[in-house]
Image (cartoon, rainbow, N blue to C red; front, side, top):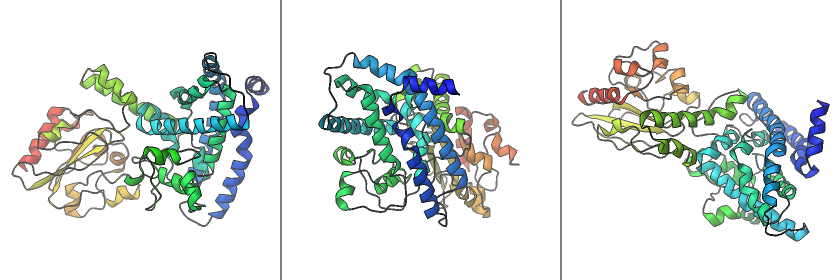
Length: 433
């Protein structure tokens, strides 16, 4: 252990330890906030808090190690090709801080719109609570993903790497204090200029109006300038659009990387296209190729390829609405035939588990008044095409349904993968009624 501390001491500048030195202040703030909201349900939960603090502690250790072995050597190499040598004065440090703020805005926006960077940033948005511990949820793989590349232009201009990292640490230190429900609206001039708890609460919301908004770190002016600002209006629903419920710290950090690699393998398996496979690296997180879910098109539907949405249509002359959805977290098309006019929202069971409400409800459950539409395993691990049959038949789909006691009446869908021929067979069954 002593040799490890000696290693850090030899290779780290005191400026690189800014966040570590601020940790006692962070811990005191968490304790005060937890005491303030001790009788307010939903602000702090022991499991979420424990997960966030574990994430923050492990991130700090991993990040310091990667700063030593990767980030600083890379920035020092770039510093050899600097345009100028800029000495630090109050004015030049102000210019550095503003430059880092602008570059942070670019990094943060890219982390939401480019899947490679989202694979790391998704960890920070995994909590369904908003408190100071949420700020501690950081990915182990930021440096591996290349977040430091966004700040290299400041090094190239002539700022010494340790000063650039120091300015970034101050920026991140400020952001810790905007992860709270303790502070409401601040004075109008402050809200106009700075990133505030109100602005950042909106950023962490999965409400449609808040998604991919308010990317600023210390300031909010670049969001206003580039059109990504939205004020806090409706009550914020915190967390991911498609939650990944886990208490496993490793899976919390790697789950989106695994999902991306799975999608890339699928492109190679189904299309044999390296271009489509590699496009998952730089396309938005919700991107999917246009012909995915084309079996819905066989019955007259044009499936949306970005985000998720619902399309209704009559299947031929049959008086049945066919609803199609896209699960943007897992890039899968979901289909269900439901009675005309019946609700297509999720049943009470899945809603109680905080699953997203764009999963369709089984027509059988609609007709029988059953409380739940599908079983736990199906809701939690729905990663394949699924179709729910009409009338009083049981849902048809993968093994997770059969484990719950359902009997799948369509043999083609009993395989782990939903082949297009099987999907068309199901579609024809829907059309025939």
